[in-house]
Length: 217
Ligand code: ADP
Ligand code: ADP
Ligand code: ZN
Image 1: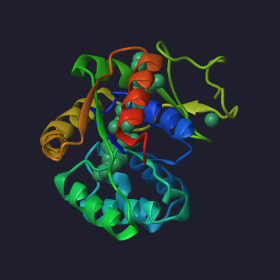
Image 2: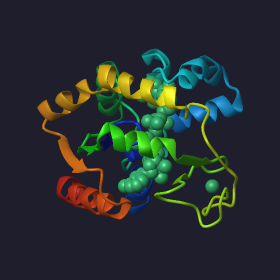
Image 3: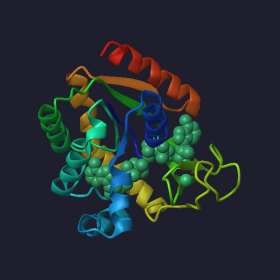
Image 4: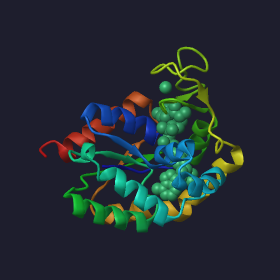
């Protein structure tokens, strides 16, 4: 499955829980880029300026990185994709990758929130340096300030978490990613979910959708 939604809609939060419940990997293109940047790989070097500005990394770089991840053995029984595809070219590439590895896209939930809610969520987001777990200083705080509940790692605010970068990313979404909503609607795969509910209620809606779409697979 692919999760769609504005930056800050809660895709990562939901994808992580859903993937754990389904026993499949959570594949987040943003996390893959951050890992490459931390390890200072060639790909990380190519991506850094785009990520820091809040622009999309060019399709050639992004598609190769995600295709490689989805081709690994742990994705053979399925995966939850978060943050990819973000362009129509990436969606076409995903179709080719799935053909090659014998996969089928079952469902594309769109986690719907207003821009105001997305901006409020982005403004308070804190991320674990060690495991990537995501918190919010008001809506989903860690038990101890600055410390990850999962692994005890330190929390930080990503360098692309500035008000200017947030506004820019919403604009980039409207121009480059929003066309995917119609793309997947036409393919009969899109299901809308109210993302302005609590984390638990959004998760319950997603589980019900997955049960209907993939229950008998
Ligand atoms: P995305 O991956 O779509 O950018 P995240 O999952 O990183 O979104 O969530 C953005 C921020 O909003 C995080 O700080 C997260 O803790 C918080 N958040 C996620 N879902 C909810 C929700 N349903 N209600 C309140 N805050 C949420
Ligand atoms: P958010 O959770 O705020 O939506 P992500 O962690 O998904 O952000 O992505 C962070 C940055 O990584 C993006 O602003 C972009 O620069 C880059 N990125 C992630 N996924 C893609 C993609 N599919 N195509 C191009 N760039 C991407
Ligand atoms: Zn952690």
